[in-house]
Image (cartoon, rainbow, N blue to C red; front, top):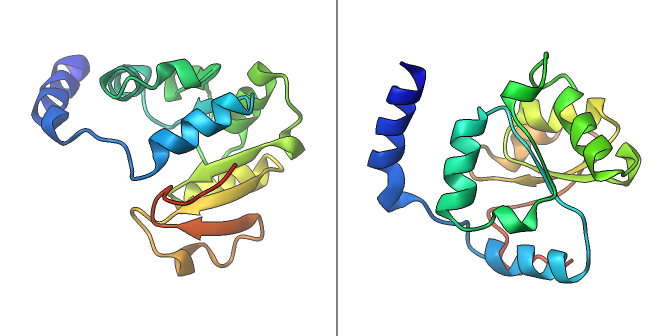
Length: 144
């Protein structure tokens, strides 16, 4: 039933599925610079696959960690620690891009810095989190 519900939602949302402004160039530049990238999401893999394949961006990511892969959800650090492990990178060498306070807290708990995307929250909602290194509404103008 869950997959049926999610399939209906995906079909209804498909006309609205698009990248945040600037994300395509940002991903291309990161890939060209040989920066390893992962998806660490509290979503189920079924929904992550929908976005990655619907936007044709799967090829940018070397690892995907979903809610299906962890015992503890954000703000527990498990999701981001698994991403770092799969990429073969020390957690302290990772930079997380997040749009939710629990996600930024999860990055903090993993020992990772975080750049906040203010798509759903204001920058002020993250001001108490010491690992935030910056914020923006989208990826426009962000350089690697």
